[in-house]
Amino acid sequence: MSTPAFCIQPDSASLAYAAADAFDAAAMRATEARGMFTVAVSGGSTPKAMLLLLATPTFASRVNWAKVEIYFVDERCVPPEHADSNYKMANDTLLSQVPIPPGNVHRMRGEIDPNEAAIEYGRMLKARFGDGGVDQLWLGMGDDGHTASLFPYSPAVKETHHRCVAQHVPKSTTGDSWRITMTAPFINRAKEVIVLLAGAGKAERLNEVLYGLRDPERLPIQLIQPASRNMVWMLDAEAARLVKH
Ligand code: 6PG
Image (cartoon, rainbow, N blue to C red; front, top):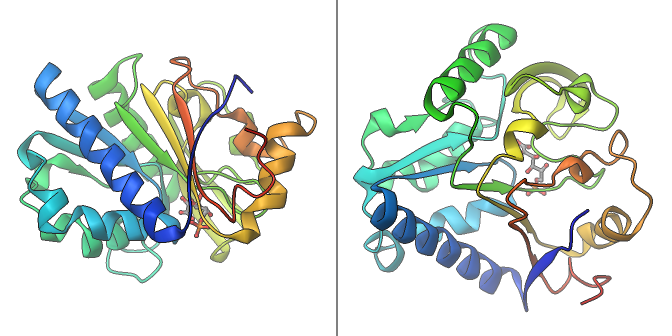
C-alpha cells in the first residue's frame, strides 16, 4: 500500500467527532471551489455515530446541503425500509434530518434484481463522473478484511472494468445475502478515501492489512489505493493498537 496517513483518536466518541469534522471540512472546501460536494458512504455500525453527529445543528449548519450529493459505496439487497438497508441507516441518522434535496441522494436499489440494480448504478456513476470519482469516500473494514461489499475470494474483488457490480455472498455480515457494491477501480478514483475503524476487534486484521503480505483476494481492503494517494485511516486507539506511527 502507498504510505498510509493516520488520524488516531483516543476513543470512539472523538473518532466520530473527527470524522464529522472531516466531512464538513471537505464539504465546505468542495462547495466553495466547485459549487458541489460528492460523497459516498458505507454501511455497517462505525459510520452511524458520524452520521448522527452530522445531523446535529453544530455540524449540519456548516454545510450547504443543497450542494451535497450522497452516493452509496454498497448496499444489501433488501427494500429501502428494511433494517439491513444501508440507505435506511443513512436516511434515519442524517438524510431525513437535513435539508438535502431528495434528488441529491443516489441510493442503490436493493429491492430490484441485484444485477439490474448494479448496472443501473454503474451507468449513473458513469454519466455523472465519466472517468473520475467522488470527492470523498468513506469505507469501513470487516473483521475478515473486506471493505465495501468486496468480500474475501468473491468475484467482485477481481473486477477491473465496471464501476459497480452485484454478487451473492454466502458469508457476509448479514449472513447469506446478495450485495451491490462499488468496485475497487471506481473507489480508487475518489479524490479522498477515508477508512473509519473503531474497536479492539479491528486491530489484528489491520496489522495484517498494513504490514503483512499483499494478498488482496484474501484481504480485499488491500485493493484500495486511490490514484490521488489521498487515503486516511481514521482509527480509535483500540483499533490503532498495532499501528506503527
Ligand atoms: C456494509 C459495509 C461494510 C462495512 C464493514 C464494517 O454494508 O456492511 O459497507 O463494508 O463497512 O463490514 O462494518 P462495521 O463498521 O459494522 O464494523
